[in-house]
Image (cartoon, rainbow, N blue to C red):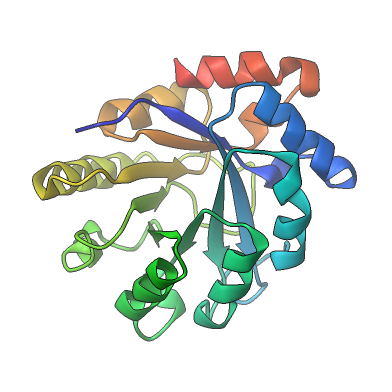
Length: 219
């Protein structure tokens, strides 16, 4: 069953010189998760942050720290991000030799495990993982940079995964990341998504605008 819509602002679009304040501001503005994009310049064409930044941000919010590891290999860094304060660790099937083992390790660390599917990765990739994951993240852009346009062809994938989740009978977040604005947020929700990652759409207009931005996305 589709859960209530939750908004996960991506700090990739925040003011990095004031990151702690920004996380505090989105917390106060009604965000549900804090989405942290970890990129290695190898698995995706950009370089962002590591466990030390997650650890530094942890005291600034009580919200779920939703950490998306766009890195390869991911396994050597799972322990460090867990210790830094991540609540959800999401990995890509292509980022290591054994995605099921990665999920097992995340669970062993006491964290929720997510799997992320790039635009070219089929929903079928989840066939033998759906009983073990807590979150499925559908990338509606090719990962690496913020501010890209939503790939509408991913809506069919979201619909397919919604059916898989409902059939499993488990409570699994269906998260969508990339090109989310008021229009595409509604399309993603209608297709079955219940967590929306939004960078530009959340942080536009400064801290005074965050609450209204989040409310509009929630619909």
